[in-house]
Length: 353
Image (cartoon, rainbow, N blue to C red; front, side, top):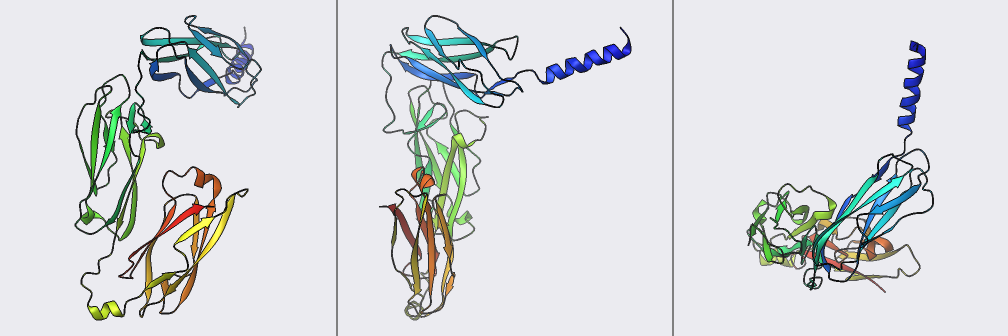
């Protein structure tokens, strides 16, 4: 075989390898955790055809007759996503580990998917007291709101947690800013046991009045990665102080008057809706809106002016987006911090008709 023939053969081989089918799976092993005895459980795997040609799944072979597989029978176009589901009949108590081998025209070797868990006679339901799930932990809250605090305060919020998994966990909060510290009631949390993480806000370390927001992350064990799946939001509202004002200063202070304290929007058959509120300085000195914050990504806001002379008015326009409003994790509202000593903090609630 001459050099030219060898080179041509190598180029063909490289081209073939480059165009070979490739299946990617987001999570090849799914932990079903605790499963009710005799109640079938299904694990759904998300996959994608990353190859350049259409993909055909020829067969799915499961590790035992207790598993049923559901997979696409038609061809899958290049770049398309698809799912494969494995259902275990849960007719045997104790731990289980089940596999399925996926055979396709994309590879000579099968792709393996697996599901595991533990079948129990009675599975406790914690969804009421612990509605949020992060890994194998259930918790009672995912938003920490330190409202109406003053310099020098050290308020504490407790996160109550329970180990809903089958192994010992070591829960902890990661990426804490300097103004937050934590203590845990238990370093190690056994399956089924409850614990508490106490979060303390050190207001003397907050830089500005108004809202300060951050995200911290709850790890099941040290070394867990940071992602949106284990995010916990934390916010603090630090109020300005007027204790040193004289009576004369109070009489001549600014005063904010609103045309409405609540915004009601009609989102029926609409993607978004807009309402307006008029702000007036009814006081005797300039009014300053030092901080303006929206407690939801569903809200879009514009404000004509942030400083109003006595008697002056401005308009706040608020737009509410329907889909984001429906998915809001916290109560949608607008917060204003002003130099009005009677109303240093103003909240405008957003509701739908």
